[in-house]
Length: 139
Image (cartoon, rainbow, N blue to C red; front, side, top):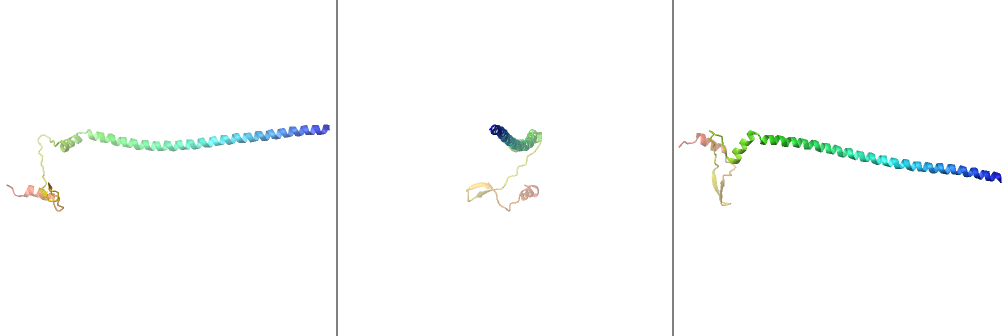
């Protein structure tokens, strides 16, 4: 009987060792699994952030180029040439000593719309007006 008690005691100790080692191994496996899930999740998050960063850098480069274009146009708008051109076209101004020639288009009555307007004939040639101006009959 002593032997059975001793054997059962050894069996219980053996069972406890195996059970706890298996339980410990299982818990360690679960812990490693959770760590791997966390690592993979962080890897994908970092990859998304890198993609967003590259997209933002591309947009930044595009916006910098657009800014340079605006700055160049601002320089153009502040130039003397542009101011003179706008004064001529918008306000019909001229420099001192400069003569302005105005070329008027032939005015015709449009019977369909019952309005006066510029001649819209496709065969109308502006060169003819200039030819008449320079070489036409002098009165």
